[in-house]
Amino acid sequence: MNENVLLTASAEDAGIRIDKYISDQIAELTRSAVQGFIEKGLVLVNGKEVNKNCKLKAGDEVTVDIPEPEPMDAVPENIPLEIVYEDDDLLVVNKPKGMVVHPAHGNYTGTLVNALLYHCGESLSGINGVIRPGIVHRIDKNTSGLLIVAKNDASHLKLAEQIKAHSFTREYEAIACGYFKEHEGTIDAPIGRHKTERKKMCVTSENSRNAVTHYSVIKQYGGYAHVRLRLETGRTHQIRVHLSYIGHPVLGDEVYGKSYKGMEGQCLHARKIGFIHPKTSEYMEFESELPDYFSAMLSKLEKM
Image (cartoon, rainbow, N blue to C red; front, side):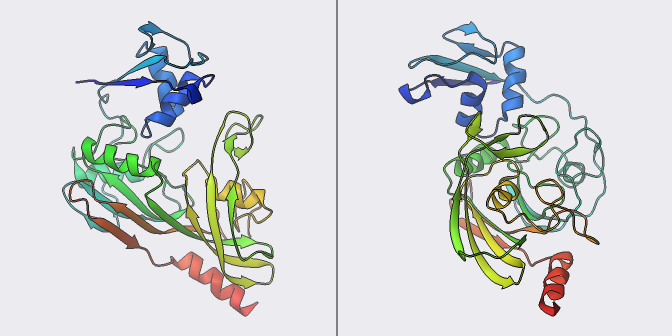
């Protein structure tokens, strides 16, 4: 059965594009997913179909008809998972560097979703559609660390609400380039899609969303620093974009910085995750040890 969501635009929402408004209001829906709903006539403003360029006025009533998940295209694969915690409602997984989270162009197999389908069967939330069952939030292919997965829609919605309310703890560690004059601080800079390089994000005031990252230097190694980062928001590539923006790109990040010989991808690890359990209301927190590639790089810096 489809889920029908009714929203009312406030004075502050006036002038915002309909696809951005809905993706901001319903945390588990991406902007591209909303655009797909609009094209299918599943989004109404004051009872009428609109296009994705529609801009809201105060008091507009927005109806979103979220469809049932389509049959899953991804296939279960017997891929080993490092499960840190699991119960009937969710599981916490320690994702290795190099593993893609969900199937996409060029990566239809070998993903975390393929492994989850084998491990959990049909016990995964369907809110994010056929390609991302259970996926509440993502981390990049070349980022290692902790990720939470929802086993049912009720848990997914409650966890997504925590992310939207910024009450969901997400702490990372990275090795960043350059010397930090300030050993702690906050990067408050909006992030949006790059105008010409569509696979990249950037700090911009146009078609962007607010993004806040708090950082502190654990140890400085000359031209490199071991840094702890806490996400207040969770935008695509947020840490990588923000650190590059202040002149300290993540070591090995060939998209926002430059590659590092002998290392594939960036040196970034999702170290800690904390949330209120959707059923028991208990606060739970999990921490992951630094993986071998990260520890080896720190040892190398120590010797330098």
